[in-house]
Length: 444
Image (cartoon, rainbow, N blue to C red; front, side):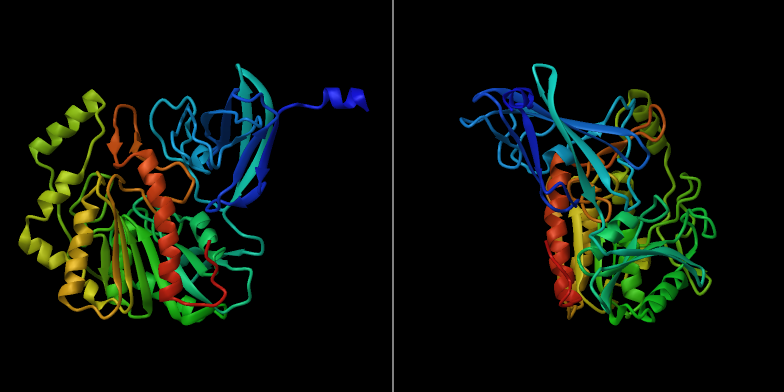
């Protein structure tokens, strides 16, 4: 017995709970240290593209020889404030030659390995699981009536209020976001609309009737409360959410993250910004048209040569000065048949989302919109600051380098975007609970 005790590891990592949803806090404790001893906790995982990501934080053990990462402040590391999920959102890609996305669109869990290191030696380790779907959440592929998507249903018996989750210009769909929202009591449809087989290849001339069919499909689903359907999207998905809300009164709540207040052009070959993005009854919607000037091209090339992150914000700000075009392309948000929640970051470098949101708020106020409308504006956050792209505790995107030498700035800081994602997610759930009430909808 004494020999067994002597060989028992002195250091132990305790994780509680061992498996939890990504939007829930987790307690990470290290015991068995010498009081005042420095220990580094390293976290490691692989994203959906199997790319390795890692973070670390160094703590000083208390008088009992313990470290609690949920309440202790690190003395150094990839984050520097008390944060129970700091080890998760502060991860960066390991050995990446340039900034990349933390790829995650499927609802498969993430396994994170925690390792305690003292004087360059690993002394304890354990795994924890971060899930996107609560127990009992079901996911069903939708491939009918020309629709492509995934329907996520809560474990509780329905019918439920429903939410459509829209992607932005990155194509595909976010099943992980839909599963997380279903875990909070909503029938959630992750709806793809371009970039997959049997759908348009690019964000060009997307028929809005496609989304109308999706709304009707949800209304006729036995697990859905047909009179309580909302829509949420970010970036071009935020623009689309506002547009759909203005056109289809069946939508009773709209959440738009980093949206445009205008109908923007389509994106063809990532270069042509004159083509239409959306059509209605076969006709293109009036849309903003952008033609790059020689100065724009020179600025772009200079940024490429100097590896300076390129901001596209000024292009859209100049577009707002074209009053006739702005008037023709402004989304008539006053026609939305329910509450509106807008979310933006003041340091958005992709486009001026805060300015766009202010224009939406002014238009709603000017038309005495009869439903609540709210604007969450985060001072130091950038473009990817909220659901469905900024999920709580996942590494946020600040800068992207799609090809060698080219860096695209999206704005914000990692910590500010992570804080905005956590704060806005709570407010999104509160907004949905108020706008699409249902007794089984669970909050955090």
